Image 1 (cartoon, rainbow, N blue to C red):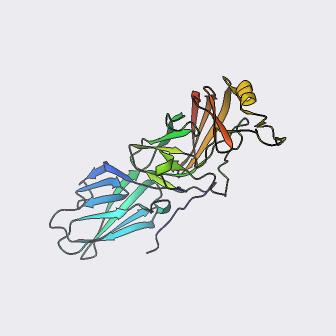
Image 2: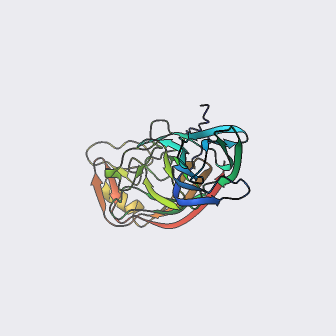
Image 3: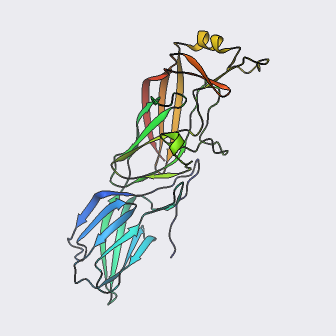
Length: 287
């Protein structure tokens, strides 16, 4: 099968469809043999009459094959996979938009059914988790009728000790599900229709270096000691941008992070225990 696959890295558009319950269903009409179609998790479910003689169903976009499924004699339900993925990444996904189902019966006669399946991805929230003041948590929501795919998560800010641009090829732009200590690293992940997901960067991003045992580096965001860090940044608000690459859109959240609370050490980094997001502005741009 000549299946179209859209795999994504930074700067490359790729698309998924996943199914949530029975999203985007259609009923039998002029196309006759189609009783119902429904997006359901990562497949498109298709049902025909119980006495159907349909033996193959192709899913097309603009005449090109996306995927297909076969039925044996006596079968009248089947599923066409829209997203191929494992635990950490997507291998293949369908192109969203206007799609055509072409069903072929055992006599070679064809029947068509048109259906539109599209995700609608947006950043719903950005916050500092109560149980992890070292990271920013981003809630991404899919309000469309077909799933989308998350590809990369970046975190940028002039006051941050270290940020992660989307173009980071050293896995810095990968992401984890919250809570981070229970999640594998993802470099892409499907998001079903009408669902949301909480993701965090793989490394802590709200930490600062406060040197106590050796000569500080002349880097701009290194501080002589925790007290100096608290004096200079405690109670201050820093600007942070959170870009996310998805299959269909570039999402961005511009947030103000208030650095508050005590300064505590975790490894070589120091963190504010009551850091919180003070303001959020989001934008969505189609690829």
